Length: 167
Image (cartoon, rainbow, N blue to C red):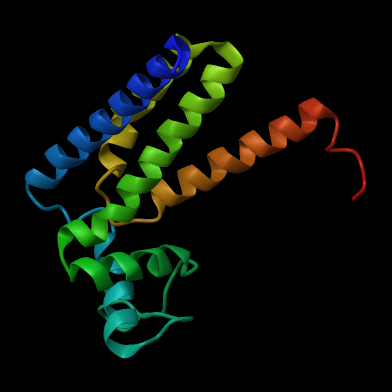
């Protein structure tokens, strides 16, 4: 391996380690499942796992879901593998925040250099909003990841001139 690929691996390891550390700190803190409307998402996954409502879920009070079920579908494998635990409920959010951080690193590295991409990625992980979202049982981290990926894809298409071409 060359020096450039070794430093990229070190940056990736640092990003994963920092994101994991923030996640572990949030998981060790007091549970906040009763706040930030997380109880709605807990109800949706409970409805899916116990009653088998895959397309339309209900919360704990029997009210129909207020958001599309993608987040609930992503929670299902985690809950099926790890049981109905706080870790299983928060794991998809951790993976989404890590995905945003890695996306920022990879794009930043290619466009502005490795140091800029690495520091930008660390800033994403340490930003108060993302540090909070890393362990939330909400759709926000998934939304951040999909919007980041879509915005990047749109920018790259515009930059390459593919946005105006017909398929």
